[in-house]
Length: 380
Length: 253
Image (tube, rainbow over all chains, first blue to last red; front, side):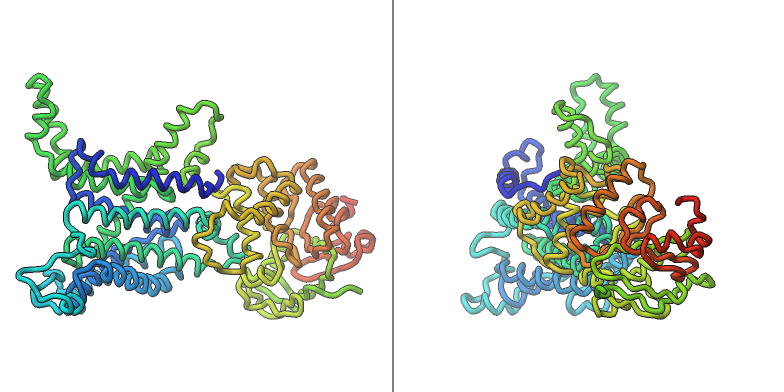
């Protein structure tokens, strides 16, 4: 388990960028190449990659990262309402404000570790969620959610042009945030986010974070003040979540409190574990699978199943449709749940562990390492 | 007479009704290897725990290099120059041996916190060379890229020693560095301790194996029931009837 050299990292970066930017092409046969879904892949990718910097490197399991997602969204919509429909200031404010909140929440929650830390983060997120519905209604617009209005101030936009008819749409210096151009803007941000995460993973700082996960006691007696390290990781991952939240608002200028609910925090945990905790690519894979299930599998109905089984004799097709129909359509959660259970039991290192196992099987030259080694090797 | 580098003055520590340390006074001279021996439960590990800030004493002071260490956080005490090898090896099992040693080396070079987010670890050749050198000395080179968690117990101990040595501490605390080792490994460790003794690093060594103690120590203190009952050169200790009675029982000699 060597730390990869900069050259190796650059190769990974190039491949990653190519794969992300060509997503509209290779996702076509899977029926997942429409812009809305592609944008979701990229946005949740940013969220999960950032979450992994905290959970994957330090092992601190936060159940409250959706709060930063929500803060990012609200900030972005406010920027659209008050300043301009350009997403640049919106995203900058989203990242900064969620970073600020992460600093505050992290400062308090990081006083504890393990399950107590998880509970504290969960408490903070649920508190934010409930505040957004109640006391903070003037800022969040409560249940309706914060949305654009025709008569919003938009000070910067007004300097250059009169308010047009209807609601304006978000853009990045003329590039629209809807459709494929929206996806490419998100994709470029994802690539930048992934690059930063890769640099952190392979820096002395990232190695120290992994050392904290491995043995925090030793870290302290080695002369490290572990708290600022943890806090930095927490703030960085909070900023990633803020960026993702901001982008959500940029692609669909509406911010609701449900974005902060614990299920949203849980989702990013699932994505990270499914793909492979502490691996660079893993969280991206988790995002792909969960979002694919949520959007494609959920759209399958009995008719689609009948078509899929059309080659079988009628009686067999009917049996197969009856057997598989609970797993598609609204039952997609069942499939995802079963998949999750299987992965956690058989591949605790997530899909990345499975891929490493397959790779080992094919390269016979190396002697069989122990199972624990396999599990942790994915950490590189 | 050498300078005193560590002075434990009148330290008391109780756990409930149990007096673990009772009027403990100890002076460690700079550049010496000072062995602490004593029966199980005499308070040897408690004493080290107080020295590194793991435990706060009920009263008394610990002065290191003229500075009071009581109330300081463990990382501050390490930064002041005290490193410790624990009784059960405390290493980073999920990292490679090389990363284990490099991490500790960074602590000494960069202090308690540094935000070097974007440097690549693979570019830190200077620290890597130093870590490799220590690993070679300690006999673990060749395994530097394997997981520390996959090492044998004896190798984990040696790795932990390497991690402490790379920090060039002013004072190294060794808590039973040969416990559970086979005779062959014990001898290897003695050789290693003798080798690093030449560097002039001050060491406190807690050890049950009298063979090790009398091989490496310049000075021996005997701890029993939380207090020092005898202190002197190895020869003085060997000859002391008080020590024979309390601990050695003559059998080992």
